[in-house]
Length: 305
Length: 304
Image (cartoon, rainbow over all chains, first blue to last red; front, side, top):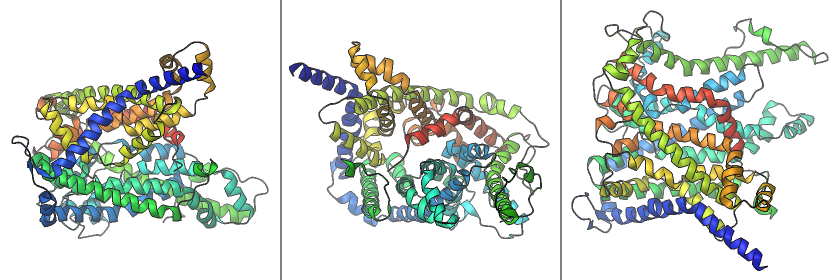
């Protein structure tokens, strides 16, 4: 008994040694910065003069800050346009890639390729392709009879849709996740509904879709959070247009970066960061609360215990 | 969607209908389905490959040849100025320097992530200790909190300790574990049979030896996935270098590329050559490791 206790103590000591890099990081790079960030958000700080306590002034200023509201509008517009589009096209693409037909591995390899490229490289390429006067996209559109193609990054109206289009190029990355979800669906389920005489649409409706809901939940959450965090694409694309499009690509994170690292308003930018955290937390919470209604778990580890 | 005007050669690929399959109508429908699917796949391929082809065409053009043509040139046919690549790498632009700089950061990050995350993942997966549940919940929570809340205080801290302008702020944090990779490694290590540890302990191995000699070698698939993800994340990182680096001799590839478009008035042929050179390492890595990568992601599984 004491021997066993000794063994357990040894194991515990070993465990904390193994954990120590992360525990140090948790305190030094996570906990302390979070507290500091919260305190900063109630202060004015420019790194040179000592911080001044402001109370809620930063948050009050945010509510009257036009650029702040613009950045929220831009981010929400992107979210509304991109999230459903990416989820549906990613799902369709992965279902095609899941078919067992000749050459499918080659197509898979190719489709996932843009997902490994950096946002900057992709943006640099698309700035050229989307040039409204001479770019390849509009030349191609004119060639098929569209005389007045969109002005893409030069037009306040088309700027956000342009970012969505460029993001669509990397859709394969999302399709990998669906694909692993699809491949985890047991073939027996399909055999069972086929015995009941189900056609392809019923197979999708009664097997594929319910079995894929956990994957859909994951993709929905990550794509919503990603939408809050658009930076690289917007940073390059907003500076790549030939005419000024004002603030139509001022995404939330771009605005935050401007305030912190261009204007040196670290307190104000921290308040913006906290508004982002609250917004993201609200979205995550709403989705988790409602997910019980539509997410189907084949196996519930909680219930098993 | 196109259905019938597909090249007839596809028919050769059709498997011969198994004897007893229900008749010609069924076969015709299957054929129509296959043709539609291939048409769709080829269309998506075009959407992905044509821009890359255009980029290569533009990169290979001489300076006086216009990059933008009334009929877009999707593939290089006439111009083969391979020396454009030498110009962006060393002569006109320092992209080789940028790539070496980025490689230094990437290598250090991979090393840091693998060593720290494997240690922590091992503890979570295979050791019993008080507070393991609470700490695991904390790990999950740290994944959900957006990192934007942390960058400003971290930046101020790194400035205060005098690391601004160096690679240290981009390297050191990776040695303290990354929640997502710890999670992946833990999931993987849990699938290794526990008997191995017990047998090893009977043989007198201590926990470090069990980790180093038994569990770590068995975890190479998940470690490969983590290494590749780390490579991509830090090769592609723009925000970090943008915040911390000010000396152009120390710039990374991502900053160099962004500056081509946002600052200097760079000729398009050189911009595209630089862009191609910058994505080449990621593309090569992807082609060499794609089987392991896709398999690795699938094996980790996302069952909610």
